[in-house]
Length: 281
Ligand code: PAF
Image 1 (cartoon, rainbow, N blue to C red):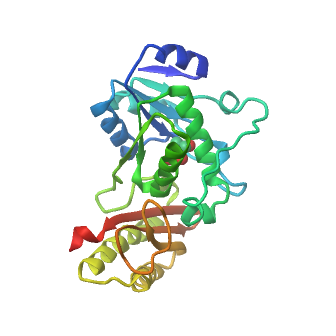
Image 2: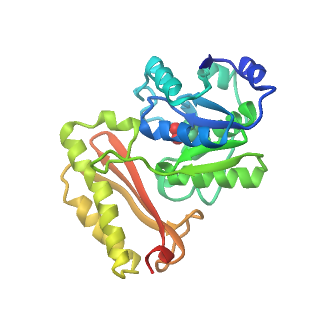
């Protein structure tokens, strides 16, 4: 597997290659990232994984400095999973001098993490559009744990005519249900135990809906009371919105997302369930 740190060398390496699959990551890889490489290998000839902790998408009081990093381990895991190239630029390689251009996607960025992390999706859209221009992939693979991110990137690709097909991939969970995240390493054993309430409450919500519940408030209240029973949990949001447009719904209809963000100590976790009523009726 090739490891490249600068844009010029990556472009040279890729120039005669076609059918490239891009797996953008911020490193500290886990099975969720490896499942993206796996999906990429099924339909692409060359798999490029980017590893870049993007400062633009972290707020001033967020965890950019302490975001977990282990480059050697990441490269070993990417190689074992079958990636062909790791592209790991420095911050100055991606953002030399001053940049004056930001990509802003409106509407789908207004709720959920967009509301609680101002500027976050500008950072994501900007770095992902740079990666798309640098790598020029045929496909790009994103995990649905960050379902709003997938919606934002798909909107950007539609609006700006990027010639890339976005492939959303399912959430990968631990055996006990916890959605995989690089940030899970921050959790104390007690917080990790209580964090199981996220996936459990989504399961409960699905059961509620399958049994006929259509009132969004009732679904939200049920989830809130389950999460609220965990003393270490601090709810940031529990929302039910249309997906992928992320608009308010009066009643459950069409395709929708039940999205959660909950803090355990300093660690902010997100999880979600995307479903449609056709599945249950
Ligand atoms: O999902 C992530 O890890 C990041 O938001 C991404 C897409 C790599 C952009 O920095």
